[in-house]
Image 1 (cartoon, rainbow, N blue to C red):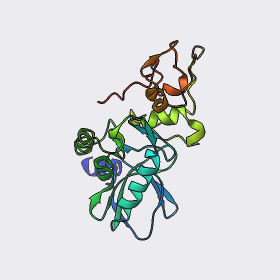
Image 2 (cartoon, rainbow, N blue to C red):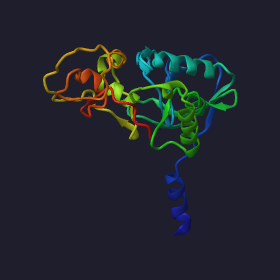
Image 3 (cartoon, rainbow, N blue to C red):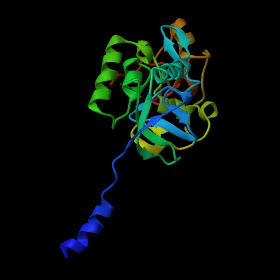
Image 4 (cartoon, rainbow, N blue to C red):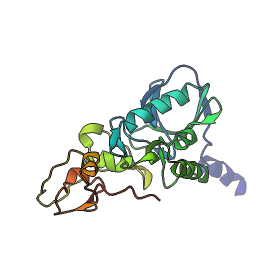
Length: 229
């Protein structure tokens, strides 16, 4: 009986992920996604600002999404690219742990402050993020929306398909979220940098200066400081 069951048990054991060396140039999509050889790869354990996302330093906006995209390009150009595909997400993209020139790609992005770690990331990734946050580099140098919140609130800037929900790396975000907001009152500020320059911050629903477009996490408070973990 044992001899008969052994082949069946062997069939149920998942095959280990195999690292694959990639020869050629990758096409970077944004700060955590690239294309290679007809496949799309997303770096496991991190979430980077969207390509068109803006962050704030002091009272000035800066293109953190473009900076994250450039950071990934520079990292991938450091040397031989090797990726170990861990899974496939619901859109068929390879969720992969990658190294370039012997350096882990995800950890490098976290170290530079060009990505945030997901809840299911490794202790090594979380430590790299903590060091960047302490040094106030990259997105940690000022205020920013978490990429998941930016995608949910700006589907017209991101486009389908939605990326990863940071609470569950392999679950998609809903295409849209519907919010019921009160009537917005003036003065009108184009962004939080403009509001802060005028002496306004942490405006609550119904207060002058509040509007939904400045309340990225929909908690009823606009232009509040980023809540660090």
